[in-house]
Structure formats: C-alpha cells, structure tokens
Amino acid sequence: MANYDLIVIGSGPGGYVAAIRASQLGMKVGVVEKAELGGICLNWGCIPTKALLKSANVFEYIQHAKDYGIEVKEASADFSGVIKRSREVANGMSKGIQFLFKKNKIEHIAGHGVLKKGNKVEVTDAAGKKIMYEAKHIILATGARSRELPALKIDGKKIIGYREALVLPERPKKLLVVGSGAIGVEFAYFYKTMGAEVTVVEFLPRIVPVEDEEVSKHLEKSFKKSGITIYTNSEVTSVDTKGKGCVSTVKTPTGEIKIESDIVLSAVGITTNLEGIGLEEVGVKTEKGKVVVDPFYKTNVPGVYAIGDITSGQALAHVASAEGIICVEKIAGQNPEPLNYNNVPGCTYCSPEIASVGYTEEAAKKAGYQIKVGKFPFTASGKAKAAGAPDGFVKVIFDAKYGEWLGAHFIGANVTEMIAEVVVARKLETTGHEIIKAIHPHPTMSEAIMEAAAAAYGEVIHL
Image (tube, rainbow, N blue to C red; front, side):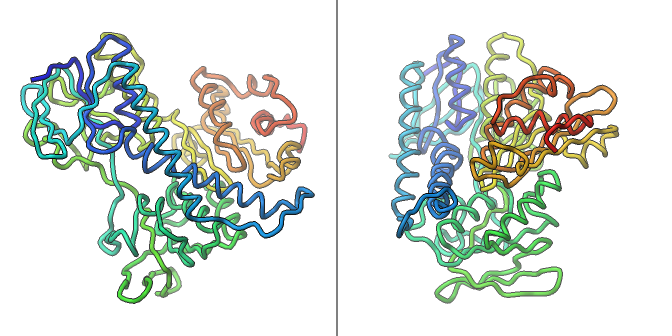
C-alpha cells in the first residue's frame, strides 16, 4: 500500500493547485484523476471556451474591418478549424499540468478514486484493477457536471450540454440555448457570431440573473441588437426530437410557443459529482448536494477535506484554487485567512464582457447600507471610442458613511481584465476617495473606474 501525506481526488483547478501548494510545503502528494489532468475547467470549460470566443472576436473584427478603414473581402469562418484550435489549446494546457506535476514530484494516480475508512482511497484503473492507497489527509475535489432538467434530457446529439457544444462537428443553422448564466450567454454569443440563428430562453425575469440589474438589461439590449432572440420569464416544457431537428415547446408570459432548432443546448447550471466516491461509507456529511465543510474545508470526518464545486462557495475555477491553497496551508500548520466569498470576482466572456464583484445595488440596499452609486459609460471613454468598443459601462457602489467599496459591475470590452483592481482595492479596504486620487493612465479603459468613483461623489470630469 502506497502512503502519502496528501491524496487529492480530482485534478481540476482546485485539485491540481492544492496538490502543487502541498508539494511546495513539503508534503508527499498523489492526485487521483480518471480523465485528463486539469479537470473540466482546463479541458472542457474555461480554457477551450475562451479559445472559441477569441475566434469569434477575431471573426467579428474582420466583419467590421471597414469601421476601422480596412477592406477585407470574402472572409468566412472555418467552423471545424475553430473547434480544432480550441482543442489544441486545451490539450496543450493539460500537458502543462503534467509538466507541473513532474516538476513538483506529484504522482498522478490514474483511475477512479473511492474513499475508504481509515484514511484510505481505493483506485480502480482503466483495466478494472483496484489498488489501495493511504494518506494522512485526503482532499475531495471532484467538481461538477451539467445539470439535467426532466424536460431536457441530454442525449449528446440533439439536446446537448457544454461538453458537446465545444466539439460539434458542424455549426448548427439554428440553436436554442436554455439558460442564460455564463455558459449560456457565452455559447449564445459564439454561435451567433459564427452565423447561427440563436434563441435564448431564461426561466427568471432577466438574463445573467446573478448580475446587477443594469448589467442584465444592457446585455439583453446588446444581444437583441446583434440578432439574438431572448425570452425571459419563460420555460421549455418539452422537446420533440423525432424529426430532423428539435421542436421545443416554450411557456412564455404571453402563451405557449414552438421553437424549431437543429440543436438545443441545456445550460441550466451544474450538478456536483458526489456519487460513487465513498461519502456514505465513510460518513461524510452533505446537505443539498454539497459537502459540509468548515472555513478551512474540513469535513466532519477527520483527515477528509472538500474544496471547489462540491462545497457551498461559488462554482468558479479561481474559487476552487483559492480554497485548495487555504486548505493545504492550514493542514501544513500555517495560519491562512478564511476566504471572503463576498470579494470573489465573477467574469463572463460573451461580447460585451461582464465582470463584477461584491454587492449589487439591490443587495447593498437590502443589507441596510446607505449607498453612493457612480456610473461611467464607455461612450465617454477616449480609449473605448478609439478601439471601436463604446458599448457598456462601469458601475461602482460605495457605503455613503465610511466610503467602503461595496461592489463594482462592469460590462464592455476587456472588462474581465479590469475587475482585479476592484478586488485588490476591496481587500485593502480602499475608499472611494482613494480611488479618485489614484492616477489612472490615459487613454485606457481602466480610467472608467476612476471616473465612475468620481461620479459617485459628484466629482466626475468627463461626463
């Protein structure tokens, strides 16, 4: 029986980061992974979708080249080439994880891991051979998969999830996207830009429903302008796949309608991977499909921890990574700070992009704050206008009494690269006045943050 200081089950952005940090802290580490190293994010999520979206961005630029004084004739999208590039990017990144494992002397244990009593993990390899491993500490980082609705059973051909959406053999002429969270709107933008006729159905009153209401309204307006059809307060009640394509029955506020499409993409959230990993046998406590953990990711079973999508924090790659680092640093006897889940940035990579952190305006009011709100549109930004990207705005929210930065909500080009300023500023307890007095370079999109802060305090210059 092989012995380790730490075994991690799952090699996604939570698992592999936890493993590397543990190795840096002197632990002997093994990582159990039955699929590709890097998990869903690297192989079937964050990374390949961003590669697809970059191709869409490039194609969109070419289509609007005349706006920049450049003539381009007969440009067309090679859909299979776009998919091929995306897979190459993901495969290259997965090989990068292999390199990091070798560099940090981490053993990749290929197979399916199951918890056993006495701090043991039984791994079944591809040939069915079972090997028992033992570790002082075991971290569960098994992630999540596409959630299925009763009316939307994924068959992988006509009703698909995000994995199939990444590798379709050909571009559908018509696509119905069910759900308008990050996954839904990113694929809606990608396929629309590639030339598909796209319809989005959202059960809640507005698209990207976790975002600030003004951001949701702006994205809906932008999407509709691009030709995407949107139904909110609506529900797909059934999908008929008997014919060549799909006929979806959709219950809308004004009555029942039928929507024809080649493919239906189910993007209605995720379900945690808790089955078949030995939780019941060992007695690990779960609630509502999540493993119950303390602020340092200990479960109720000594020596067993859980991080990432299977716990109650936001299901985001960077959250899983942060949790993994905190978890192993605590195991190593260090004194890490618990994660502040109200200072986690969220990014959505459709066009225009969305980035946000902290309280929405509505949430800040509900929490009892007296607030100051500042907003700066990119139509007033010299860099945005010069770049041909005036769509969107920066919105900031401060506590009126103490100047605490409560939240920020961006929509526009490259805003996912701008939100880190707010995260760091909030971590350092920076006030609105300090942001106003911090010189931002000109001309940049980032100036909009300073201008929005100034707008909150009646000091904005360029509006």
